[in-house]
Length: 402
Image (cartoon, rainbow, N blue to C red):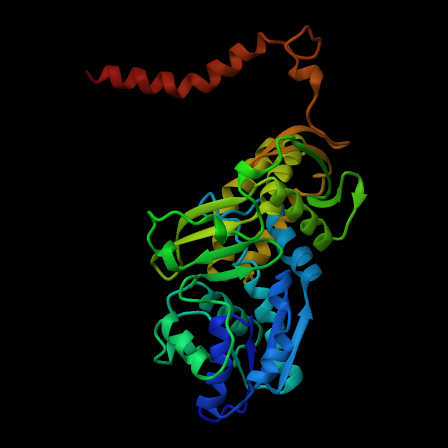
C-alpha cells in the first residue's frame, strides 16, 4: 500500500471522514480527492467543498445524485416492499452502493489507484462499500483507516480534529454518529449505546414529536404507475421531488420515527434511532395499491422473498447476480400495480382511507355480503372438505394407534 499515489475518499464532512482526509495525507503521503454525494443531506452539505480543500484535498467533488438515488435505488427497493427485520427501511444501506459506484467512476476519471471510506471495523458500511468496489473494479486497492489507525474512539477523533484545526459537527455532549439522505436520517452512539436509555427529543431532525403535530388530520393522495409513485394530490413529480414532499408531509405530522436494535452483518447487535417520514408513508401506500392489483399467489411468493431481498441490501450485495435476479422478478410483479391511494396522516399515524385502480382485481359483486348472482356459497362445502381431508386422515391415524 506504500506506493499509493492518489485516493478517492467518500467524504461526508463529519467527524470520521474529516479526520480521515488529513490522516490519509499524513500517513500515505498521497493526494486525496474527495467525493461528497448529495443524497439530500440539506444543510450538512454547506461549505463542504471549501472545507475539504482547506483540509488538504487536491480536488473536491460535490455531486447531486438525488434523482439517481431515488429512481434507481430507493424506488426499486420500495417496489419490493423491502424492510429489514420488520422495522428498518434500509435508508443507510441503500445509499452505500451508489456512493461506492460513483467513487469507482471518479477513481477512473482521476487516475486514482485506491479508494477509502469512513466506515468502522465494527459496522456494516465497510462491507457495503467494499463489496461494491470489488464488484465494479475487482483489483481496486482500499484504505480503511478504522482498521489501521490507533484512533480507537470518537473521543480520540475529536482530539485529533482539534489538534489539526479541523471543525467537526460532533461534540462530547452530542457524540452521535448520524447518516442522512432523502430516505432517512439515522443516529447511533452516545447515550443510544444503552438500549434502555430513551432518545432525547432534541436529537430528531426530520420530524416533530407526534404530540406536537397538528390536531387536524392531513389527507394525501398518492398515484402509482407500475409500482412507482408518480404524483401527489394529482401533481406529477420527479422521484426525488416526490420523496422530498412526502418527507415534509410526514415530518410535520410526526410520522416515521423508530427505535430499534438490529443484527449487524458482522455479528453484533446495534441500537439505532431512525427517522423515515416519507418512506413510512410510501411503503404503506404501495402495500395498499398492491392489495387490489396483485394476484394472491404472486403476492405471497414475492412476500416470501422480501426477507432475502432486504438482507441482500443490508449486507451490501446490491451489485450481485442474486439481486439482479430478484429485482427482475419483483419488477415483473409490478406491471399492473398502478392506481391511487388516499391516506390520512395524524399525530404519528398513517392510515389508508381508500384505494382505486383500473387494474383492480377486487370485484364488489363477488365480495359483497348482499345478494349476488356470481358466487355459489354451497360450493364452499366441497372446497372445505377437500382441504380438510389430510387433517381428517391424520386424526384417524393417530386415534388408530391408541
